Amino acid sequence: MSMIRIVYYSERNPTVGLDMKKLLDTSQRNNVRDGIGGFLHYNGLYFLQALEGEQSVVAACYGRIEKDPSHHNIVLIGAETVVERKFERWGMGLAAGVGYPSKETFIEKFSASEVDPSLLAAIRQGAPAST
Image (cartoon, rainbow, N blue to C red; front, side, top):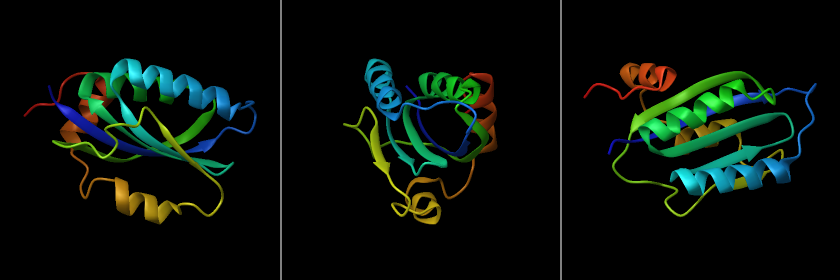
């Protein structure tokens, strides 16, 4: 089983209503079901999220996020194959607020040092990356 971690950044679409409790409840339920761990930061304007788990399920989850009208201007800022999880016991953790954490801190702690182009292509296509 190939495990990956992706990190993305997106803007909230202000034309779409957002119920954060419902979003978090749904994410936690689906992520536990799919074996995905992660961390979500939302400050009212922007989302930063790390997702990790088996490659095909993370790719499918990211595909759903890309189609979610709550998000626009999605930028995939990290994608890497991982051996060890940072969020093993988290179905989805949430940090909310304007100052915690800043975009730079989040990117520093949770993004890949390099973005693997073959992994990005596989995520976009929902196929396994070549090894």
